[in-house]
Image 1 (spheres, rainbow, N blue to C red):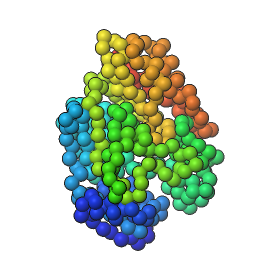
Image 2: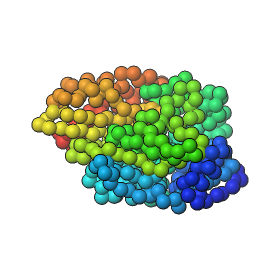
Image 3: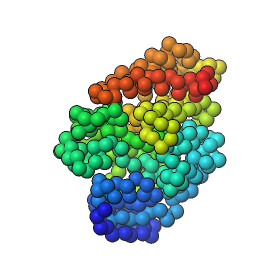
Image 4: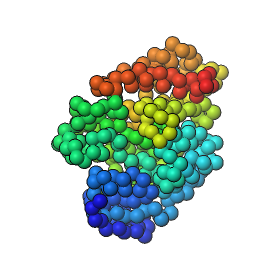
Length: 329
């Protein structure tokens, strides 16, 4: 680990001013950042500790939504009464991630900002990683690609985003609130993250010095019919091969509205918009659901080791939606 300067933020404005330098990182729970520093992937010259800022509150909004403080711990968020009753999909997703010890320390803001678990990104002895070393190539394209993206990738990067929480937030139409020296912004989760394109080193659309302060959830009709399904190599402490956040608003067997988001398949949580369109306003029958699941991965471009994700993704969507609808267990 390289030497660095440690600074404790006095308030949000101080944090934003201190974080404008490109060699500065914000430190919350540190469950991902410190590992990256130890392994030589990240080497900031300054850490600004934001863990003591008053950003941990979880509170109801006047419009029936919910605001999750960026500094709230993952465990506290998952177990909060309003989250469990109004947004059980989020509770399920958080509890599917990491381990209890990590969830006790990790923050909501940090969860959104965790970096990919691509082997080539973490292995600094391997030179080819455009995310770690722009312009060096993507080792995974010709190497080990089992865990990698089948949707939204580019010739420059096929890494996947590892967060379970973010997948549920995508299905719940979450908005990320950020603060910088130029003021506040509200970014829908779909706009918060970037696809790799030719700049895979840029995971989000955050500007230098911008700090996540909260995550807003709109009032949700999906509490009664939702499910987070995570398919992984082992039952705990493993990242998703494919995950599905399914949320349905149903009446008399008809899907009034639906949200389907996929994890483990793209550089960011992937909304299955065409699948949603095919299911909304219709009865949930097996043929239609199978066709919607197929449409969700119609644009997949798998690598030689992860073509199985195309079929796995379809089956996971079908199962997650059926469980959410209450017609399977």
